[in-house]
Length: 150
Image (spheres, rainbow, N blue to C red):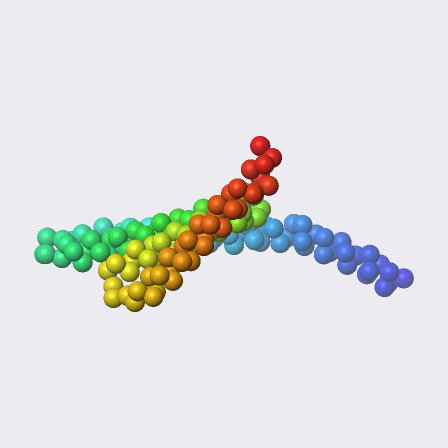
């Protein structure tokens, strides 16, 4: 009789965990991740503002380069936060958000190459990946079940 009671309780425990504990835990972790990324971006903005002190000393080109690259990284972080917020709102991550985030990160990386030594093959590879992601983004937007339901 005890084994039957344990067998009957086991699915209930699994159901309680999967329907209440797990979603709350995932939402808590996602919220903490958004908070952490927000604080990281705040420290980045403060660092950029403090870097403006070097401009009067003739460090304008280096400061401008650093500011552009750092701003692009922050835009990529904003896309990650947007994806996490969509997960909290929808309970899942849409493919279009993932593609948007990847596009922002890759375009930022490609733009960052302007200020560094780079191999032409690396640029062509990056551009090829960006073109492929843009095509995937168009396909996912065009054939999304959500866009046909409206």
